[in-house]
Each structure stands twice: as structure tokens, then as C-alpha cells.
Amino acid sequence: MANTAMLTEAEYQDQASRTLHQLMEALDELEDLVDAELAGDILNLEFADGATYVINSHRAARQIWMAADRQAWHFDYDPENARWFAAKQSEELWATLSKLLSQKIGRAHVLAPATLAQT
Image (cartoon, rainbow, N blue to C red; front, side, top):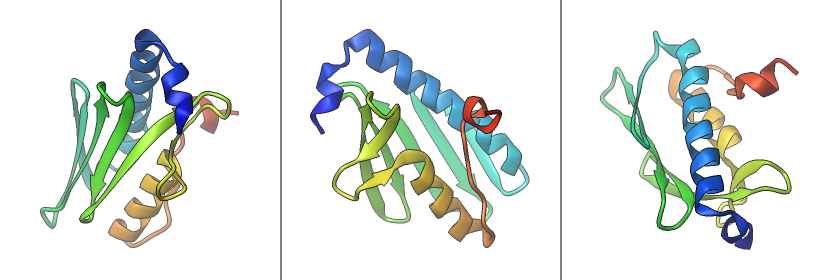
């Protein structure tokens, strides 16, 4: 997706950092089911069964990368729709993580940034 190229480095950093922090806040709701830790640009999710999901800012590509359940996604920021989108899988970051977490914890759970959840 070429939209990421339109972002300046500062805009990318702002969007990526904001998203990682929002993800961390949203994951606090599941603290009894997943141990989430944000260190720098890397968000690690650890589950009781030893599974780990990793979501990180990849500055060189100006993407957010996610690895979970032996799969990988490279999300580009789409400023027109204010979302991170993986063109290869045609998936949005928040929806993809919600789906993966729901499967992992065995019940439906929808993650949303606090600013959207209040709207």
C-alpha cells in the first residue's frame, strides 16, 4: 500500500507509537488471560500455554508487523481511513488481533482504541 510512503518519519512514528500504546491499554481488559508488555516499539503478548504474539513498529518499512500463530502481517498506515491495513491478507490490525485473541481465549472479544470505544 503506497499510502505509508506519504507519511513523514515523524508522522509514522506518532501513528505507530500511538497505536502500540492504544493496543496495550485495550489489552489491559484481558490481563487475567494474556500478559502484555510494551517495551519501546515492541509489544509482546504471552499466554499461559507459552504462546507469544509480537507486534512491533518496523521503522525502515514504516509498518507495524505482527507475528502470531505461525503467521505474519505487515500493516501499512492508511491515512485516508485512519487504520493500519495488511494488503496481502486484506486485514485491518485491530480486527485481526481481535479475531486471533478471540480464538486464543475461546470467547469473542473485540479490541478497540479507547478513543473509538468512547464514541
